[in-house]
Length: 160
Image (cartoon, rainbow, N blue to C red):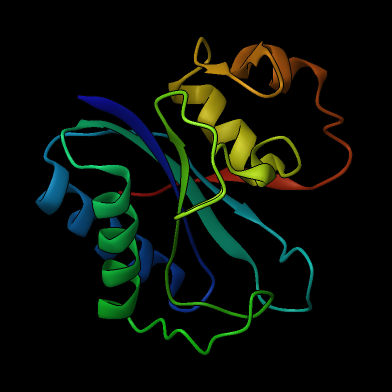
């Protein structure tokens, strides 16, 4: 079994799409750990605010199977391969970690934005403070403690 962490984000019908994304993850993976939901301003482009969270689960799927599944869930919820990287999105699912694997394909692991974006690092810290980042050579708690929290504004939101 591999321990995986997935970031979820949406800024189009964000409550509905994040809920549907979580439901899809539960359908395919079963019970999962889920962080609080955070609202943040768009990063990299002008757009409406995002809802973001992180889910963690153990899986027997291979790395390639997980990546393909996440892309399929995104497509099932209105995301198309032609969507630009920095643009509004219905549902964004990014694999952050697959155990301690370091690679660039089929996904960049660990995902670079873990150490750069509070909307990934804070929710990850909530559910995996002791998880060890193999490139940064620090726990998620240590990374969050050292993160410059004035860089990005985000706040917890009530979410069911």
